[in-house]
Length: 144
Image (cartoon, rainbow, N blue to C red; front, side):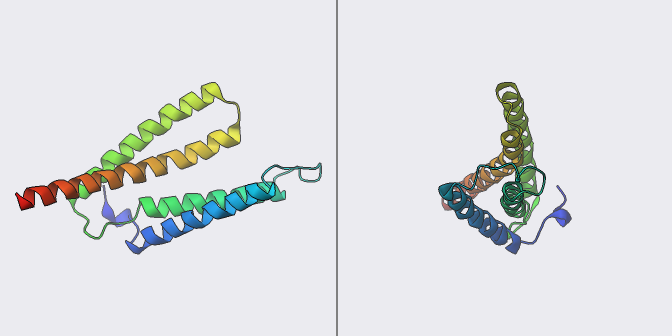
């Protein structure tokens, strides 16, 4: 995987910050009951419900995108291979869940949100887990 297409390391922290900001905003919206569109005036593309959904979804997606595709402090061939393997697994998981959700659900907004969220979250979790395992193995072999 070419590292010239990755964001600088500091973008990871910006991405996590954007994602963390997204969570209380959505929870606050749900607590106040603004998450369900209401009234006949709100129909259309630029109604407040849809604009809020777009804003929070973009905040979440950009945050996860920056967190997922930022360089590590030390970027070598092994990390590139771990990144590529994690990305491949994320695509596999995404398509399995997409097929299952298409069969079992007709809620297109839910399917879109899952299709946007699952690959990035699964990629981040698997990549960070593999890095953790790799570092733990290196420390154990270095101390032996």
